[in-house]
Length: 145
Image: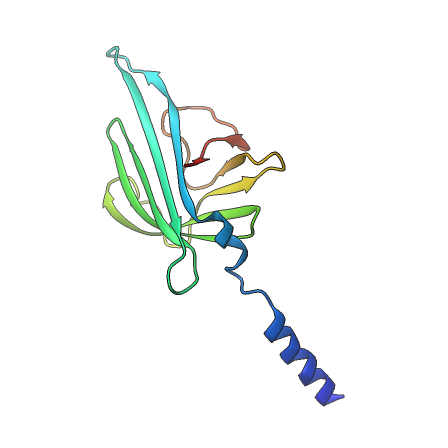
């Protein structure tokens, strides 16, 4: 009985998919441009989010998130975890800019979900759109470039 249990355990270990394998499908460059908003002074404010995810040598998907716009500049080191259809973008550390000091390593910034029709839906976490006072989870924000 012990030998059978040991064999089953080793078989499970050898045939298991590595946890990071599914999330590798998210490797690539993504962009989100918030709708411009008219400022009180009459000019239009714009905000651009750029997410780059790439598999490093360690096999964990990681990369960088840049958020730039009117009085906003953040460059963040991030990692992703999840499955081929769902990826959580997780804060690792701030690289440059301001506005990320309230974030802690491990915070989920947002989640991306591949819908059956192929669109990428965004579910916001610790970071949310900067220009919109109201936004809805599940909308298409990030587009793969």
